[in-house]
Figure 1 (tube, rainbow, N blue to C red):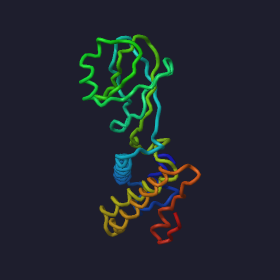
Figure 2: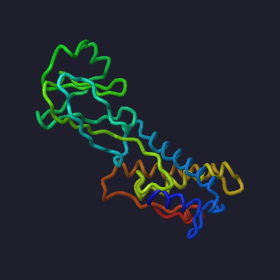
Figure 3: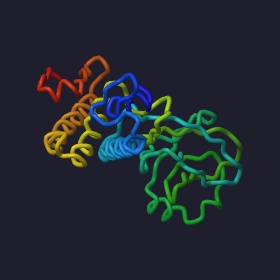
Figure 4: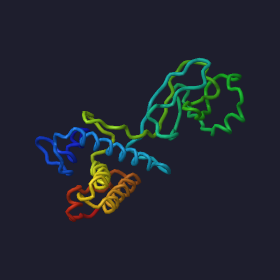
Length: 226
């Protein structure tokens, strides 16, 4: 589902009835709901404090520069969820050292150059030691944050199986905005159940994953086994 289709589920369109029962031509309402959807995405992203969402795993590469030990970390990395830094040229995985330990051991990294064996994270950068003595490509495996979506987004980060969780989360804000539409506290419980399902699935092999429930089935009380 793209950004526009996700919004249409809630706001409606010329051909689709929306869950919020609002005027489908109300652009202000549509923009407001989009903001709520992105708040839900941020909440889902922030749930990965003690784990990481597998569907947000990513690998990027960067070239070294001779004599340079500091490199920008990926701009979409969530917090400091760096899983591995390595290079295939030297067939080496760099050992991570917390920054305070790193700087205590190596106050001046410029004094040593060669093939890096350690890395640390500090001030939005990845720092390698020893300083690269040659140019090669190194790899970074990390967990990224969920990107904000727009009305014309062609892709979204949330897997198809969990789009209902995002919709349920957005409906909490709608019910808070207009209590006549529904009970936001009950909706919060539905949303949290969806988050729990996501976490369970995250810890399972692909063949064991559960099937999603539709938002409308939940609202109408037809709850199917998860």
